[in-house]
Length: 103
Image (cartoon, rainbow, N blue to C red; front, side):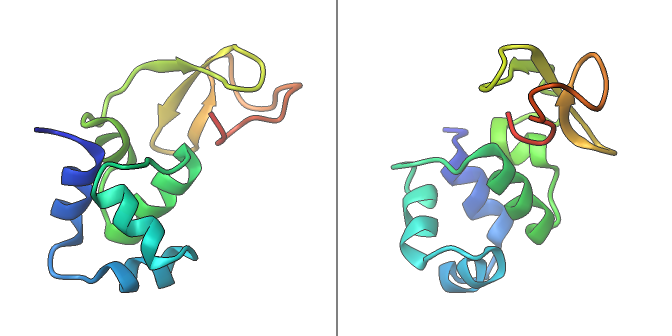
């Protein structure tokens, strides 16, 4: 099964949950919940985890580096993943709701 937890486990290689927790500033229990698919991190945290582990954020969060668009949780406008800027509104940078990088 291709879940966030299985992708995270794969990306971690031989690293420990405590190591990842220390690197991204969360508890070991949070990492355990993510790896066990009991919870998923916010998208901005998923990006931080991906950057820390050296994997593509879209792959880690959704199983595909090309995820298309999803609605912004603040204003509802479509946002998309870009390699250069992370999550941003499809219409471009700089929006009224200031939700760039926070879907």
